[in-house]
Length: 469
Image (cartoon, rainbow, N blue to C red; front, side):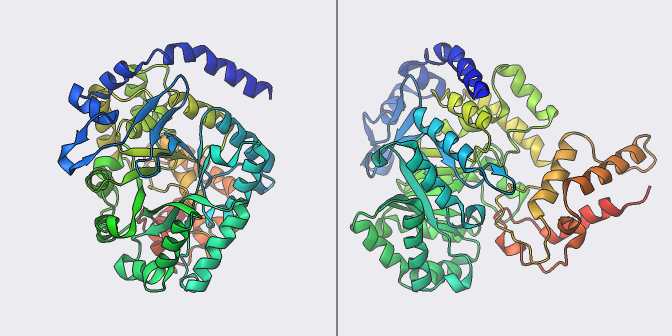
């Protein structure tokens, strides 16, 4: 608790400076004209789309909020993602989850995102327990969860409806504020129709919305852009009020450069804006990669804003875009939560100069040979026991810290780095979890939202692991 108290004191010391950001300065830093400012603050019509724009950016002395244009919900721009929860002895550390959720609520975070798929089916129960333990009134926060019917055995009407009803039970609630069709696009239009439309599930969800047990319907997107376009263009028919997309300053223009089947976030964001659908952001930090930048990328950011963390740049980029309702963060550690709350209390939008710098960093990162894993664990469990995300995390960590053995075996530090890498690799993972256990069954490939050719990467890591001096 003394660490938390110290973090609170440090945060309080900087609040006076942060709170000087009034509405006029906020809009100035956002880089908008007077007319655009009126639009952003909900004071005028958005003539390009022929509607009144009710989007508001509320900057108080604490958390920054956005208004849901469909329901009027006042949503914290920072959302709590419950995919990566703290662990203790191989299980969710529920006491710490309770503490973090209560801290988030006390500091204005009111959007909590989970799924039946997260934490080996334990995330919803953990969140439900933490929210109940917080003592906060149910109407003071918003719960988002998903229909995560990924396996074909879950595509039936009965299995899907049962998953939905279990979510209500595990979350200890009688209604869900934001309900998503989870991970659409991976299998193309045919899989989309099979999972949600041909089986009558979408009709059921719309009935639940009409009954008030679902307040907002949306979807999270990975994969085939044809699916995204079809869903967004049918917004009026299905009444989407939000859509969840992967967006950060690298994926904004370079998602296709990293994995050619991915779609640049700039295009996805523009289509949502055109059809009056607000965006919810996943992976604003690319699975933590933008929070743990190699020094070569972090240095220019630190020079421009010496007191800001690399993570804050990622959140500020997302929050600068006014059609974003909330940016999700998987805040495993209390210090992550405290830093992210500070960034959003209030949000300090990126200037044009800062956006240009982030684009320069993004262009360089695209050529950096990281494995683009976000640790979502959708690929798990591996039928042969390989811990796929842990293998990639170890490799990326060594790359960022310049601890990979050089390609040139004649290099003076080759033997030293190779020995250290192999020793560290075997210490970080159990023998049964190593890349060398991969049987190239390719079951994981279709599950990966980042389109990583996982068996190919496992072969490369195995070669490094078994390389001789």
